[in-house]
Amino acid sequence: MQIKLEQIIVPPGERLLLKDVSWQQFESILEDLGEHRGTKLSYSHGTLEIMTPLLEHEKAKSIIGNIVEFLLEELEIDYEPSASTTFKNFNMNQGVEPDESFYIAKRNAVIGKDKIDLSVDPPPDLAIEIDITSRTEFDNYQGLGVPELWRFRRDGTLQINLLRQGKYVESLTSPTFPNLPNLPEMIAHCIQQSKALGTSNALRNFKAAVRQLLTE
Image (cartoon, rainbow, N blue to C red):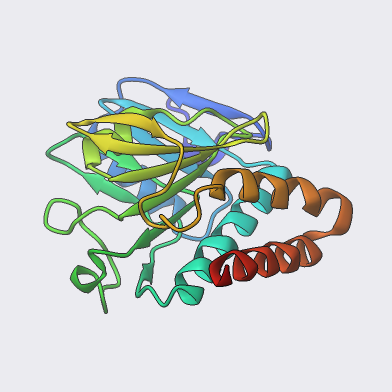
């Protein structure tokens, strides 16, 4: 008896791994699940991961996405948000849904597009993953050629990874925001502060600190 996808329940904070999934099956699962769903999908060389985020994961995602948009606006950097778009490339046998993503240097290539196909379109310049529910695997992002990947880890720290010769190397700073060398620590502090003061107050404090740094 064949089990249908809608029969599978993945509780919040858990993940399900399916092996030997063909690209056609992956495409069919994406279509069946639709865009408005509470799960995240990641596909690499026949292995499909289905994950349901925790509330803690979603809060960190919202805060970091808000921070990046604020910084881009404050520094007057043009961008196109691509959020949790499904990025996939049949030729590379990879597919991934970041928690947040942004086109910055390559924004002109996707302006006005409703769908992105990485066999013809460039990958986002910056992708963000929240590793509270599961640990980000680099294979997908390396294969798709995402130049900058941020990982907010379970220990409450932010890791910046830059693509160098096809592999990610950890960096202490973000080339997107070179004027903010302490950005990882500032973001980690903002998320920690949000647990005590609330999200809006923590973001307000973060924005004030950034504006002060930029005027020094």
